[in-house]
Length: 293
Image (cartoon, rainbow, N blue to C red):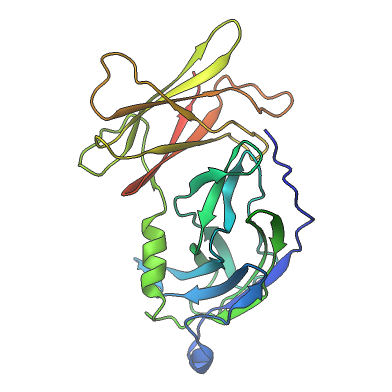
């Protein structure tokens, strides 16, 4: 595994978000101006607040636009690449900020392996919980990300937006991005409809030369499925699972993936480790936690 792709050090930049109060309505906007980079551009988009009882969260998103054929990376980049990094230090009236990750895809990294990320445009939804929902929110986000075509480059943006606190023209793009964020479901959940995915089993098959993990994914018959695995901490660099022939007698639609227990950080023990699996199809995406036996 090579997590050190040919990148220069990425410059950390600042994104500012300001929450709406009645005195700020005139400053509100549905999207910031684009900040252009070579082969990429980024902006912030705003959506309607989300309410659950007395709790209020502010909806926003980071939109990255890429030239045709260019890619950027998911939170786990695969065999090579760098994921975006976020630093929310300096925010005011912010209790928490969650970055949501729409389902990614794998693509060749040009060095014989595969990376994981996004091709073309992507919106990373942001959910901001204010410390005091009656007061304005000022969110500062330092972000660095990488883009790759035939070569790889660092990219940066310096964006600001005042959240309007109401539904705007970018709402549809935020809703669509959130719809592609993998659903969190338990291991062994049954496939209930013609479009749903499930991870049936995760188990080890060790022999004298290999320690590997076998995963069974249930999916609608004929639907393409990909599987990604992440370790319990970011310094785990597990290989991408590869599809293999299902075991004899497997139910229709069951897909079988395997990967070697390789890429563990020094001193780490795979026994009992909690792994995160993301299964992706054109119509569904799920996230499942499973502890290795």
